[in-house]
Length: 345
Figure 1: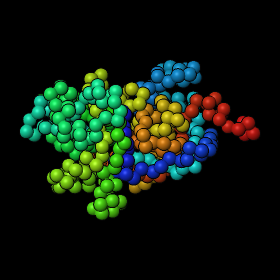
Figure 2: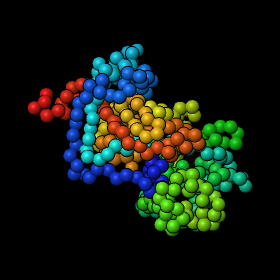
Figure 3: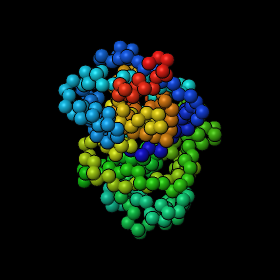
Figure 4: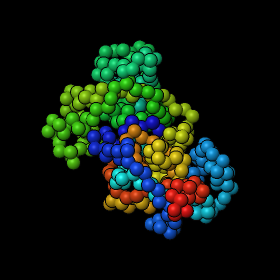
């Protein structure tokens, strides 16, 4: 699921990663040091782990994956084969959330469905940066070329779809089309939330995806102009290989699972790894998840984005999340202990 930004990136409230020069520290823990470990559904996590472990390289991972497909007791499997490792780089932990938008659409334009979801034209792929959002939508350059995957009924929801990078479109005939990221026009993203704050319309703490959506809809031409403030424009492809009942594709090109898949920094956490999270906030979460996705705002050892699923309810839950906590990566035992300095081995 190629996501350009988290929901907090949309409104310009992302937390910066630790400095590039930050030293990384590893602490091997025991499972009894993980708060809530015994109460989790480890079998559910094992099922999700199996989805992507087959794509992990290294003889130890291959052996673990083969064993994972034979074992029946998830808790015993993880405790026998892994050790939790706390990785720290000096930055505070931050958990945010993301989701897969679901829009209403049509295969043909109608008075209601008149906002196109575009495929990427070849000239945009070979000439970067290409036209701005305003030019793409107002110059007529996309018209009459068969580049429309579908038409949707809400330009703001389409804008948010571009922020998330993938989503589902429920057609008038009842069918569902999933679309995924195909490329962009090469312009840097500019936050419309920050622009509303700059204009004095809202204070930073008041801005959310829902607030932006309502402001654009209330303000007609001014709302349209606000969206043009962001010159970045995302093109899509139809993702026909994923059944509608399954989750969208993550960075490992496999379907991800609501509340069991997270996005991480792949420079620090190996994709496919089990990750134990202890999220604080108003709705604490203690859960074993699998690192199956990435995001441009997800940088740092203690940074994670939790996938909440598809549709409006998932979007509301994801949009509220900005919580502290800590996360521990479950590593194969030999890999975990190899990270320790010789003095403590």
